[in-house]
Picture 1 (cartoon, one colour):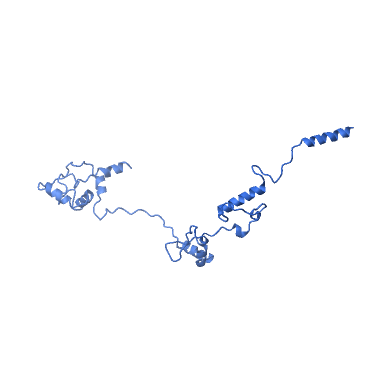
Picture 2: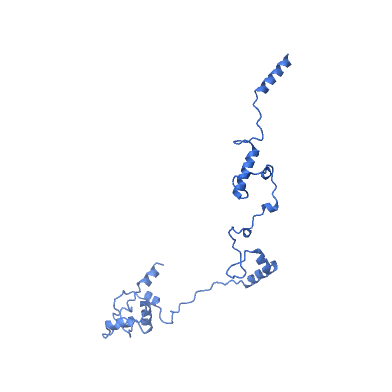
Length: 226
């Protein structure tokens, strides 16, 4: 009696269990075979291998694992397709285009031995130059240095120190100063010709020792700011 009750209970539980779903049915579509066929048709239509809306056979549907061969994994060459964008290739006839990235071109004219010899030649030609002392300032063209003169003076511009001839005129001053491209060049020529004590060209009529509006103040300030 006890066994009969157990058998009846097992049968009752089996009748209440939900049915096992079909493996061929997917989620959101009728079946995997139909889904695969629709997808293959859509992919073929996008690829242009079949006309839009045309039917596709079961032989074109891949339902199992696919083994990729070497030819299938090889990327298509852009030169084989007339519509593809051509790749920039090296041109041995054009020296403006380098072919250093082209292994076939480089390997044809270089080898491991030649690279070894080239590296050895570069190492042999390499020289280390030791630093040396800076040359002594010679005053430019051999005359007095306006920098040294500016640092050796302390008077202000317009402060008369040296005697000047009464024959010096404004016209002579303007005419002779116009011969120089800058006041630095005028001051250098003034010192070279006997200045600041003598002023043969009338470049320093006020006798301050500074020719053609030359100002020693910037040179003095540069030394103070160091």
